[in-house]
Image (cartoon, rainbow, N blue to C red; front, side, top):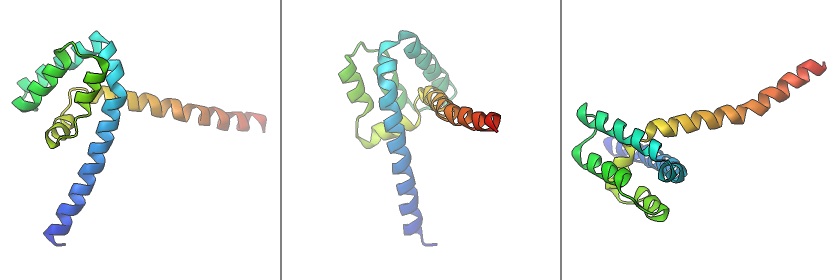
Length: 126
C-alpha cells in the first residue's frame, strides 16, 4: 500500500471522528453551560489529565479557560465549535469525553429499550 493512500485513509477517518466529536460537544454544550457541578467535574478531570501528562499545556489552557470563564451560552458554544485545526486537536483530548460516552450509553440504552419491550410483548402474546 502506498504511503499517500495510507495518509488519505487516516485523514478521512480522523475527519469523520472529528465531526462526531464536534457534534457530541455541541450536544453537551447547553448542559455544561448550565451545570456548575459538571463544569467542576470536567475541571477536576482536566487537572488530573494535565498532571498525568495526558494533555499538553495548550489544550489545558484552552479547556481551563473555557470551563472557568463566565460566558454566555452562545459564546460558550461558539468556542466549543471553533473550526480551527487546533480546536479539533483539543476536542480529541477533551476532559468532557467521559460525559460524551456516558450520554451516548444512555441514549443507546433508551433507544434499545422500546425494541426489547416490543420483542418481549410478542413472545408473551404467543
